[in-house]
Image (cartoon, rainbow, N blue to C red; front, side, top):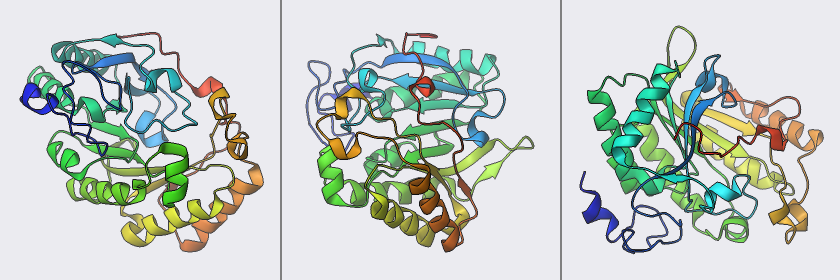
Length: 300
């Protein structure tokens, strides 16, 4: 795919900066060539993604959403990472496959979609055979998702907000819910119902994650209700309680705390009352900085 023609006036994400990424950076803070902060086996995804062998996670720097509560702040703001070529990215995919990764897990990949497509093509010619996951924020243009048809096997996407006011306040993206709904539709149209191998590892499908935020119970309910009534159990919904307030949320005191067990239990009870069966829930102390990996350029 011709990177120059697309990135010389980039509109890959809903921000549609239209800037020349070979010369400068837009909202996502990303140059034309991929910048990666870590490439390694990752054990902390949903069980059907990580399994016991691990998911081959490639953490890209930069982000088109920039949530005020971001747990990967240094990566999202491109304060770390190493710039590589598409050829090197393809090599990383193959190295992760050689480490017996269950899949290639592209984390925050949107702004490097063209490099990813090029790298997948190169890696498949070299023998890449494991599923490829697009692990994203949900703030995705349908047109960009359509470019990925035939390259992505699993979409692991967030659905952060239904309320435009909440989306505007915490991510400066008042149109988030409209964008995310359209993106999930296009994702599902590509994958269809989930498919698993004999070990229970997903090979194809859509998992939609929702990270609960403090004081946003009704918004969480609206998201879960929408997803279930739209897709029933043809997708998996991952309801997450691992929100960890970092120092950057101090200007937002209402979200400067963890989710309580009671708050989480109420949302799980609500999901069960709807009849949801294909869901992931979290137990124990998941709201911990220890679950945030070291972004030290490992494997890059």
